[in-house]
Image (tube, rainbow, N blue to C red; front, side):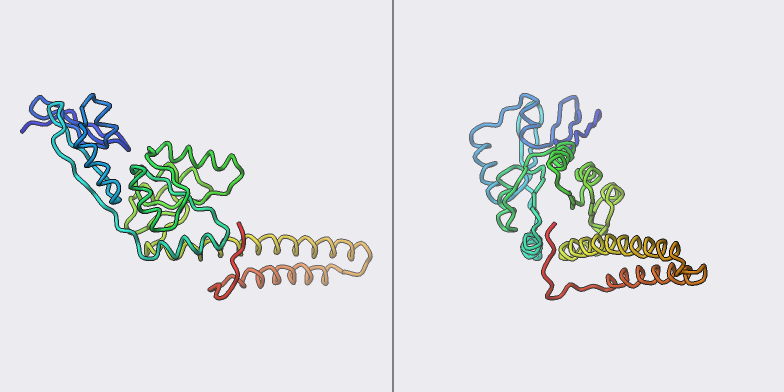
Length: 258
């Protein structure tokens, strides 16, 4: 068997020439783009596979559809609880996927996700994120595959699976979950909210102390020595406020809205 001319089309499939004949492997749209017929029986089989939450890779050789390979993801047990916790934190969850809409709805229904954008190419995922950003939303993208890399880079915050994620996804993300534990996502959301509040509080406190010190110095109350003590005292306050974030568990705390 002699193969040549191998090409990969991201988000669609691959093609090559085998023994002088064209070989295609990819999604149905990719197969149709090459003028290969998907008959009624094959279409019914595709619908059945999609309703079961399976991804389908079609194989065509010599301008004929010859077989279909079905792939099925396994929904993580913690997915439903994670989505519930994020919703409690007033976080809108959107599923961006390259899978067929029926397959996407199958898993989204199990996880409790209602906003679905299916059949997206890698660039289209990034475009969806840009559209949401234009609406004034702060976007955190969570992904693990090569196709997620552009979206991870585009989002305000990108979170990748550190162990099972592809290298390019990890490189594109701002945060890598080394244990691939998605149950940490709600904790990450709450921690980021608290970190933002702490930064704002620390800046306000520092400014208040500095302005007070300036006025007291003008009034002759503070000397260079006491002024230095006040300055260092303000720094200590800022450090103590930041230390509140150390080992936070957020147990029995109400989530902060985003």
